[in-house]
Image 1 (cartoon, rainbow, N blue to C red):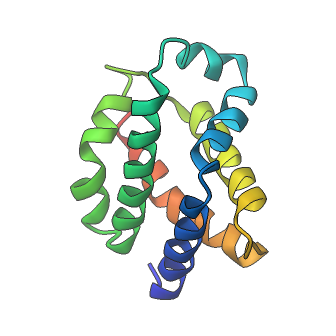
Image 2: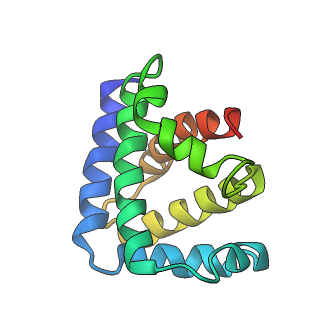
Length: 135
């Protein structure tokens, strides 16, 4: 992945994380996206879940920095936990997850632009494609 795109995401993620509402706002948007999403998260400890999300966003960034070996290196455990054998997180959930993430970035990143959105989408799709391939 182009270093320029990775820098755009790194900078945007830093700006989003500087806003204490970032992860809460993401989950508000994501949970509102579908009754199926709300059902999946019905018994979730959101304090722990937000920590996991923050870590997974950085893991996705690391995975995209080395598209050859990065996804396997940084996302293997996440892929296993989200597979059909465990949490059963399929394609429909990733579509809603990405849409919710992009909407939250648009809302909270003060330097949001179409270029920022495209960079987020490219980087996150590296990880999403890997997770789906291990479903």
